[in-house]
Structure formats: C-alpha cells, structure tokens
Length: 183
Image (cartoon, rainbow, N blue to C red):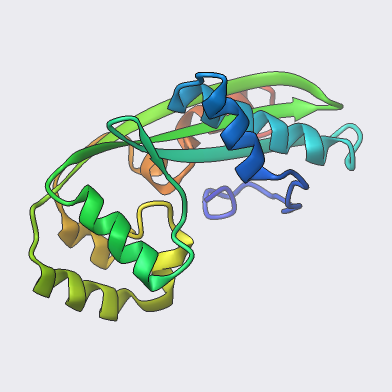
C-alpha cells in the first residue's frame, strides 16, 4: 500500500512469534485494538534494531467477531469454517500502525471497520471457495473486499485501507508532518 501511494519502502519481516504474543495479550485481557497496537509495536521494535536511524512502520490487523479473534486460515477447510462462523454476522477489522525509530515509539494509530456478512448459503460458499482458491489463506477473514470477497457482504462501514490492513491515510499524514513526504 505504501509503495502504491508513492512512498519508498524496504520490507523486512519482524522476527517475533505473533501467535504466542497474541495468546499472551489475550490472556492478559487485552482487547482487539490494544492487541493489534501491541503487535504492531513489537514488529516495529524488532525491525528497528536492524535499521539504526530509520523510521520503521509496524502494522497488524485483528478480526474480532463478538470477542472471538480470527487468524489467517491455514487450510481451505479452516477458511470454510471461518466463513461459516462469520456469515450473517457483523465483525470488526481492527488495524494498527506504529512508527518506531531506534527502538522508540514516535507515533501510533488504531482504526476499526465494521463489516456485516450476508447470510449466504452453502452452495454460494462452495463456489466462492473454489473461485478464491489459495488466496483464502492470505487474509484474516478468508476474503478480499477488493475482489470477489465483496460478494460476501451486506454492509461495510469504515476506511477502505483499514479494511486492507493499514490505517494508511493517518500514516501518510504523520509522514508529511515529519517531512518524510512532501506536503
């Protein structure tokens, strides 16, 4: 998303155990927003150690449906289970971004989008899963609203970029304020 917005970036994956961190946050009673922000910060701090002086952006997204957090499905069967659990119900996508330099947090933003899946039948689910294929495992909800996945929904409220996994507009504002981007 940053590259598409004209921001020069280098990608360097964080070396953290996301699953373990998420379990610990959940056990400590963290809500989805606090957990997404904490995970984004953990990622940014981890990468920041390898890039002295650089602005490092960490991001995370959690899908929360009535208190249940969904991870990316590992298999087609898990994707089907996720979609069955979400159909006919509302859920939130909580996206967080944290900017760190030399291990110090400079900025953060958490945004939420509310999505309501329509109550589709099993025939539609079968056709959707067959058409979406392996891409189902790439997203936390087993859907992409920027493609075929939009057909799963009755209503979507929220920022498009937040739904894609990054509160991009506030991040761009921060980068302009820091004169990283031209204003």
